[in-house]
Each structure stands twice: as C-alpha cells, then as structure tokens.
Length: 160
Image: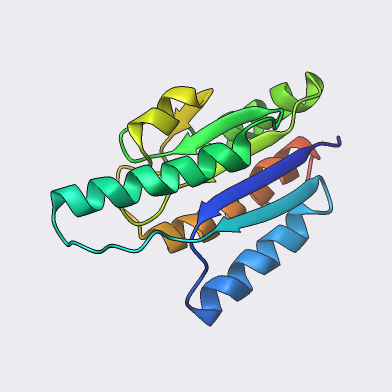
C-alpha cells in the first residue's frame, strides 16, 4: 500500500502535548503512507459578533481554496454536521482513493469551522464524532485515526 495523505489545517498547535501527539501519530502513519501536515494562519477576529465570525470563516475559506486550487486528490472536510464513519470505513475510504491513484486531503477549519463556499467544493464531509472538540484536538484525533486506518489496511495489530 502506498499513498499520500495531507492534513490541511487552519492554525498552529498551541499546546506542546498536542504537537507531540500529532507528530507521534504522523511518524507512525508515515510507515504506511506519505503523511503531510500543512498549516495556514488563522484569520484575526476583529469583532466578536456574528458578522466578525462570518468574515473570519470566509477569509480562512479563501485561504484554503487558494492552497487547494490545482491539487489533485479526494478532498474531505471535517465538520460537525456531517456523516460519521468508523475506523474500518475510514480505512476503506483511504484504500479506495489509493487504488484510484488519488491522494487524500483532509481539511480542518479554524475554531469557527469551514465556509459553506469551501464545503461545497469538497468531495465529501466527515464528522469525527457527535461530540464537539476544539479544532486543535481534532487534528490529534484525526491523525490517530489516520494511523489506525492505515494500520488496518496493512494488516497491523493496532486496531483491535
């Protein structure tokens, strides 16, 4: 199995334990696929009201669109109000993409989510849980699940 997975995120990780955990799972997953993490800066919230939040989400969405423009692969946006899948189903999504010669681009928005304009351009939407997580913790969970899915595909013992 060989493939490429890129996790595209708004913002940098502010806590050391999150950076360490993400790097740990990225390295472990790298035994099975080319794993990359791309961070884009968070937009500054100038007005803490719905209009200010809307502007931030739109600015971040435009930044993500510029980054993704021209990139080939299956784009999957992580968002709260999307279908969920289990680890085996995530593994199937990766395998399906790899067999088709596609990379997988997993997109995590900022603390206010992803713009509807960007979401409409994604191939698919995925929710990690019905629970709400901070977007930085979401990255750690996603990388752990990426490692788990790749381990499943490789016949590893990590997934029980």
